[in-house]
Length: 250
Ligand code: 13P
Image (cartoon, rainbow, N blue to C red; front, top):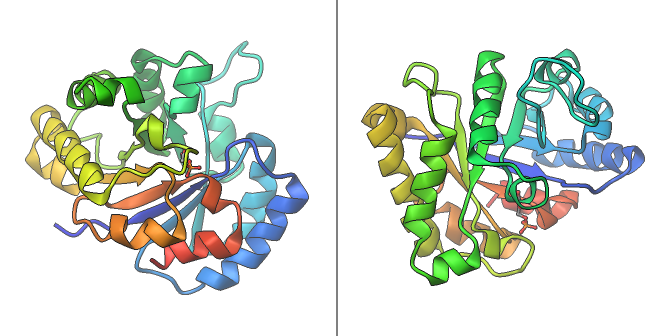
């Protein structure tokens, strides 16, 4: 089954509103008419309104790096899915390893956020991946299977269609060390097999699994030409219009 690739930019905690607007103004003409892949940008919350406004009507979708699982409430510093929708956001990352590592996000929280995103028709990109010690201990498959089961608890096959998974080995994030295309494809196969077990083969076959972790213009083609890799979640190399464009056009 043909899966349309999604090339996504995770800007993390970078850029001012002026810098974000300059990126969008430079980037949109570079990817105008590019229909082979879906493109999405994930800026910080404070940048979302201006980036959404600047990208309006283009082929570039905009999403949040994080949402809260509650509809609203006394959660200082958090963003609700309703707030995201109200300003025109359509996607969200969930469970990025930096959220897990620095903000104590557990599989249970990831699961709650996934339910909330699906309920409100926000496209969720669920991030999973092993840390170096887990890979070295031969536990990669075990960790991925555990994370998938945790994230997908209570998710039905009927509801699962919008879900995108991002496999981001933590040891490859921001380190310049990339999983080889074969390593990434192997992990993606494990993930897809587990999704098939939980939600059935058709859902698994249609689900996009992105790779993230030091994706750069010079390794994008070898990674993205793997049949198992359905796109990329890009950090550092997504901060400049020319390098992100080179990845989009791999
Ligand atoms: P880098 O591309 O900077 O390694 O970041 C990957 C990432 O964490 C994307 O979510």
